[in-house]
Structure formats: structure tokens, C-alpha cells
Length: 617
Image (cartoon, rainbow, N blue to C red; front, side):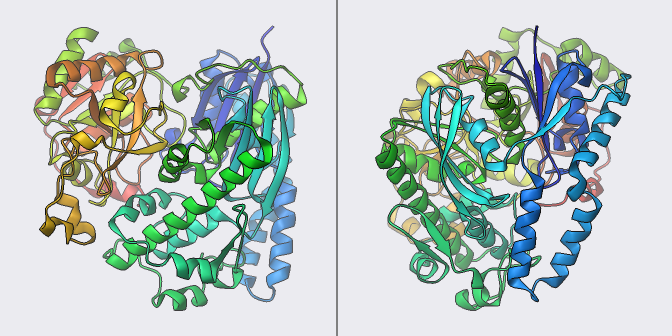
């Protein structure tokens, strides 16, 4: 008989639910996709309902619900931290205590109350609530990294802001066991150091870190010594200590303090104001420091354990530039990164802790991995989609697969932008050919068109390529699979274009409009790209579409960005997709086998008030 375990993460940021069936990962989704509130931290009632519905079960059929961390340990950290900083930080302490005394201190009661509501909403008895267990934050990260990985044995490195006390931790996974090696404790945190620079450069903490990473290649790392001489002491083995007097995250509402601002000679940048060379150089500098720590930690773990594989999780594992350097250095024979590395993925890790550690169930290793390509979210049939389109009187054409892919290849070649809604939704922050916006990477205007007319976001931000798995080393300097878009690699030298002496002298954003390669839309200013390799096994339809584009153009690569506008969560339903399509300057929308052309849709008056729905990140 099948045994179901439900993992949940919530109440901090990016809440999610994940369901496993007798050890197999069958469903997972973030709450934001249903609520349409980016990084929604509320109880994931919609995500839980989806997970249960996907298997045709109710909560009564679930053996346990496992929460991803131990809230009382976090409460202990908050109390100790505030007492250590007193009397400073009084206002934020009072604000935090109000939330804790109202909700988080009595989390077990709060979770049970919400689970009962989910059960009642599914017309089942509220009394049938499963047993509620608690994992630990970094153990949940480690479990999400190791258990789905293709390795029988591996070192596991978790790096994030903070969970309970741990900010960086190392583990050894073997078979069904995960054992702790060591941890670095709060307030010394690589994730929070990176977030402090995210905040200082005017981006939103916990969502703007990838912007800082994208900005880094425009700058020079001229502040590395200043950071290392003042903010952080890095040991030879990669462990570190911060000089906490420069920061305020441990005792206030802000990330950085006056001493930090004095060190760099100016106050934090206000969001949406001009980005200067100073901010680009800062981004480049903190990126170099981050890479140094990650590489040193990896080297010392390899030497210490002798184990040849590495798994990564935690928010810092989404730093795909550092991941690319790690791969290039060949410190480990093989690396696997949990695609939902942040707290959302910890819902999955918590469920797996329950199965393998609480129930001591053996682990079956999948040589590719057990994440099903991350396609673990809701999917919609052609019947459901056509019914919806007829209901709203949207003109559409239905085409069978081979003809559909050929037609779309033609649209891409014309320079048109396509919204691609295909199969189950992805779990994690990346669109991987389930909910994607697609374009021709050879088109020099594609980056600015997509940034300014489709995504409504900053012009400097690069786009990622999706490349046929079998063609990756013809296009990029890498010989590894990268199915989850978590590795950055250089574009193949033969495809790159040398800059002239005049172009070489340009600074910062001026570099943006210089084509670097025959794939200008996906080549960043440092000749790199964040690569997704597409397999015919995990996403055959997406593979077939790119193959059709290759047959037409000779190019096995397309531009892939997430199907949303800036500040909005990635689309989940056909309704979300159509709404996004009509609000932007996308040319074509594909909903499974239905193709919609913008030119044929009813004319709507241009109204940009909807942009206020989404808080900019």
C-alpha cells in the first residue's frame, strides 16, 4: 500500500508544499504560483490542495505532515541575538515578538488549524489530520540536495542566509543516511553578506540577489581587498567570520549600518534610481569574494572526506556563476545542485527526511536524478484549455505536434516572441520549458525587446539559452549536463566576436549593445551564458520544438526566460498565461496544442495600472 508524506515550508518567504509517495517525488509547488503574490510566505493551502488533488487523495491518506524547520530553535536565536545587541534593535525586536507571540511560538497549533481548513475544503473530516513532525532547516536543505541526487555517496554543502542557527553546513550522505560534519552559525553568514550588498545596491533582499550576480560582469572587482580587510575574515579552508559591526540584519530592519556606508563612501542606492559604475564594481567584488569562499570550502571538503561527489543546496547554491567556477575547477568529479535550492525546496527535503530517517526507508538512486526535470506542478489538458479559450472568445488554432513545432520555428526565425505553456509547471525559481517565454538567440534586438517590452525589467539583465543536450559542447565551453539552468559557462570561442579597441574602452552599461557572439541575445558581457540543457527524455515536446528550430536555422539553441512580467510570479494556469500575453508585446501564445496570434486577438485598450499589482523586485 502506498504511503504518502507531505512536506511544507512557510511563514518566512517562498512557502511551498511537496508530496512523496512511498519515497517517490510526485508533486511539488510554491504557493506564490496560485496566490499570484511573489514569494508568498503564507500557509501553502493552495499548494497543498494541488499536491493532494494530483494524486486523488485527501489529508486523511497522508501518513505525516513534516514542517521544514524547528521554530523554537529560531526563537532561541532571535532572543539571544537581541539580548546580545540590547538596547539597540529595540523596535525590530518588538515587531518580531509581536509576530512570534501571535503566530510562530504556537506554530504547531497554527499549522494544525490550517491543515484542518484544507481538509474541510476538500469535503473530508477535519478530524483526519495526519501526525505533524518537524525537521531542521539545514537538514531539510541537505536532504533536498542529497536524496534526489544521482549519487550513492556525496558531500553535501548547504549555504544560505540563516536557518535556526546554521548559515553554512557540511554533511555526508550515503545510502539513506545524512550525517552532519560541521556548521557555521549566525550571525556569520555568506548568504546574508551577499544580501547586504543586494540591499546596498538598491535591490530587494531575498529576490534581487540574482540581479546583483547579473550586474557583476559590467564592473571590475576593485573592492575585493576592502571587503576582505574590513567585512570578512576568510580562512584557508573557506570558513569565515564577519565583522558584525558593519551590519544591521541581526538587530534591525535594514541590512547595512552607518559603518558600512562610511566604508564605501555613500548611503544605499534607492530602488529604481540610476545604477552607476560604483554599483557594478561592488557587484563584481562581492561576486569574487563569494566564489573564493565557495571554492575554498569545496577544496577543503574534498581533502577532508576524499568523497568524489558534491551536492549543493540553500539560496547561495542558486549563484550559478560560482557553480560554473566550481565545475570548471574539477575539485569534485561530479556536482548536483537541487533546482529548488531555496526554502521552497526545503518542503521537499522535509518530506524526504520523514521517509528515509524517521521511517528508515531505503533509498533508490536514479542515475539521472529523482526530480522529474522539476516538472512537478499542475498541468492542463487540451480539452480544459480549449474550453477556457472558447469561454472568453479568444481566437485560436489547434495544431498537432509536428506541424506545431515547425510553425513555431518559423515564428522564432521571424523575430517573434512566443509564450510557451507546456505540460506540468516547474518547481523552483527557473522556467525550464514548462512556463517559458522564447525567442531567437541570433537576433541582436531580442534582449532589449524582451527586457523592455515583455518583461518590463532592467535592460542589463541577461537571458538564458536552452540548448539541445546533445549539442551543448558545440555551443558552450562545457561538457556537463545542466538541466536546471544552474551553471554558467563561456560561449564557444568559435561563436564569439572580438571587440574593437574602441568597444573595449567602453564602461558598464555602454557595453550592453555590443554583440559578443553569433548568439547575441544570450551572450553576457563577459562572453558567458546561464545554460539549460534540454533532454528528449525529461521534456520531449520542448526538445522537439528546439529541434525544429535547429532544422530550420542550423541553431540548436533558443532564448528561454520565465513566463511572467517583472514582479509577478511565473504563470501557473492558462488564465495566467493569457492575461500575461495580452498585457505584454508577446507575438504568439502556445497553450499545449493551441496557438494564439496577438494580431487575431480582440483589441484591448492599453492599461498599465495592472503593473501596480506586483511589487517590483
